[in-house]
Image: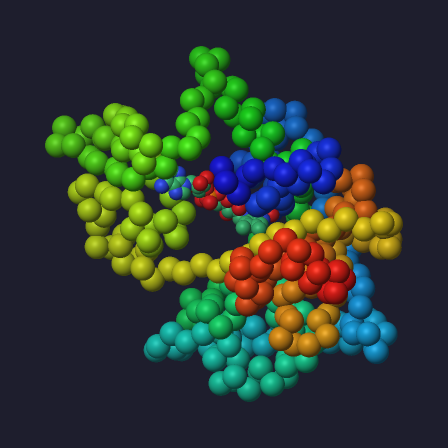
Length: 317
Ligand SMILES: Cc1cc2nc3c(=O)[nH]c(=O)nc-3n(C[C@H](O)[C@H](O)[C@H](O)COP(=O)(O)OP(=O)(O)OC[C@H]3O[C@@H](n4cnc5c(N)ncnc54)[C@H](O)[C@@H]3O)c2cc1C
């Protein structure tokens, strides 16, 4: 539940530290169904209501230039998608863009903002993203006719309700601070689970939902060992780093209806530094925006102190 923790320090409803959005919230979406079942309110979020705050300091924002930059980046990614199936050997999206002579066309600060947006959706920088296995699934899922929703009180409320609502009215027993170190399947199929704090549990079955990074680091010993197929997949699949921040302003400088803003970086090296701003005034009842460290900055931000991050946020916005 790590990415479903809520930080209550900024506003009453609390900000989810991980997921905030319910994507593709149609009637088949399990998260939507749970919110309805528990009578938990969801807010509408329409990602088409966006504005560019600043293209750069010397050039005023111009909608035509913004649209052209966004279209150029879409076209460049489409070219990579078309190349994907013909690739014998995997290369990064960055290499593919260069090979296709597309990167040169999007090598300016405004276009790089939209590259950062793609990296945000894919969850990694184009230097690490696979060109061979690039998919456009998220685009289908982000159809404009199904705008995202936001759990009004954060994802944690839903988890609280799940914990409280087991069929026999006994709250689910969630054990915090129990880092699993071993999952041991016995000959009689019973499973022994060992934790770093010395606790040992026995179960009929386990469902393992460990993050990929933990599996890659071999932090948990499985007996018998995981299959070669599973180990191969764990080795091959990668992931990137995205960090999320909330910025509170002295007043709301965006219109009431604006739900996403974009700040183009001054320098292309700053791509991903808080360039995507999601307005949260309707959720927070305060002039708050949610922003992300993506691209290479996603990774770099892990090493920075709160003060350094605050300074970068102030400069970027
Ligand atoms: C900044 C950010 C924003 C996001 N925004 C959205 C969004 O708006 N909408 C959306 O749908 N998704 C979003 N996501 C993605 C979403 O958070 C993840 O897809 C989701 O959390 C994955 O759930 P999970 O249970 O697989 O992994 P996790 O949420 O990572 O949970 C894994 C759990 O395993 C625990 N664990 C690790 N090792 C051990 C061990 N040895 N023993 C016991 N427990 C262990 C961890 O502490 C953690 O609690 C976002 C992610 C991030 C990082």
